[in-house]
Each structure stands twice: as structure tokens, then as C-alpha cells.
Image 1 (tube, rainbow, N blue to C red):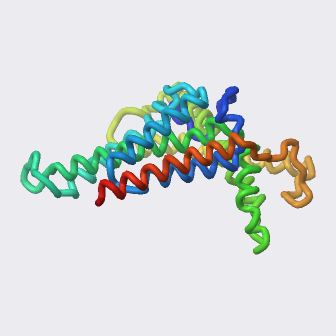
Image 2 (image 1 turned 90 degrees about the vertical axis):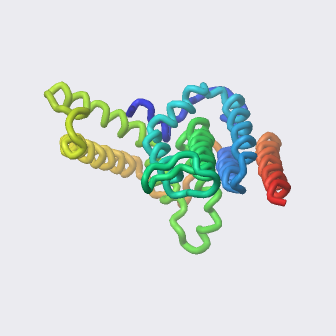
Image 3 (image 1 turned 135 degrees about the vertical axis):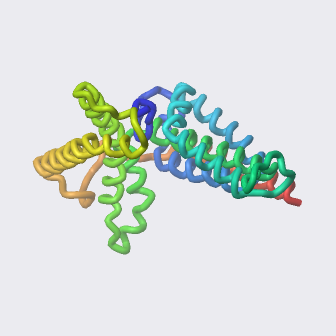
Length: 269
């Protein structure tokens, strides 16, 4: 299961999406999220799915990566589906037993929410799949640069977010190694009752926290040895420059969002 977590990973591929300005990719991701939440009709999911397939095809990222990103959130999908099935009782009753009842409205809402979450995870993951942590940091700092006028620590905030994303795959790999070591010593991590499984996680969490703090200290020491002083007066190897391709991508995302809003208004009317 841990190997299926792809959050924060970057896949260097020569594609059109990889070459886009990271600032525009962040804005396009926000527009994509707005597409999914612009209405509660199936048209949102259909157009959102077309958008995700288009972007993933242009990025040359294997479609299997999208499936792998869904596996870790499968319990969340099941929990969401159960909540909608149980608590939404609109429409015709399809099944009932004592106080439990599954209705047509609950089934439709459950399917819609699951589809929305799946598209949200796959679509937003494309941002980290196609953008290196360094470029992502520069893009976040550039977009938040107006806040520097009110003395907001923009560079530090962007750096922390980038480091957090960068260390997610590292911590996942470290957790996998610790679990393998504990199993080799006879630890029963996958057997027993729920309480027993929770107790079995303690020998994993303690070394994981120790490793995380050790890595953080090593990183801080390395940055101090290189005389890192933050964003003031700092130059970059690559300056962010927007091209016509970036504006085209923004236009396409805007048209997708506009299409969804128009169709939602027509359906509602």
C-alpha cells in the first residue's frame, strides 16, 4: 500500500505539460478544482474526466500512476459512499432494513462524490508529477510575492511547502523499510484485532519520528553550511518566463470552466 502513494513525486518526462510555466500550472490546477465544484451535475464529472485524460495524455505520464494515486484513499472513498448512502434519503427507496435505507438520491450522490474525489486526486496530482520541487517553490513564491508588501514571509512559506512535498516519498520509503525490519523481527502488523494493530504501529511511529527529525536537522545544517539566508537578494538559475503556450493552456482551462458553468445553468434552468 505504501508503494502506491505517489503524492509529492516528480516524474521527469519530455512533454508539453512539463515545459509549461509552473505558475500557470498552479493556476490551471485551481481552475480544474473549480470545474469539479462548479455544480452538482454529472456534466461536471464528464467534462472533468475529459480534461484529466487530455492533460495526462499530453504529459506522457502513464495512466497507471493515476490508478496508484487512488489506491491509498480507497478507505476514504468507501467511508464517503457509506455516509451518503445512509444519510441521504431523497428519491425512491431501493432497499431498507430496520432504520437503514438506501434511496435513489443517496445512491446518485454517493456515486457523484466518489467520482469527484477520484478526479480531484488524479487531476491535482498532475501538478507534482510534472513540476520539480524547485520550480514549484519558485512558482509559489512568485504568485504570493504581493504579500511581501505586508511583511509576509513568502519565501520561507514556499520553501516549507516544497520541502514537505519533497520529503513525502522519502518518509514513505523510510516507513516501508521500518515495517520490513519489524516484520523480520517477528512483529505481527497485519494480524489481530483493530486495537492490536494500532498498538503494533507504535514501534513503527517512534523510529519514523526519530528519522524525520534527524533528516530535518541534517537539512538545516546543510543549509547553514551553504550560508542560506532566505529569499532576500537570492538569485535563481532559471528565471520563470511565460510563453504563448502557457497562455494557451490558461485559455483552454478557462474555456473548460466556462463550458461547465454554461451547461450547469442550462440544466438548472
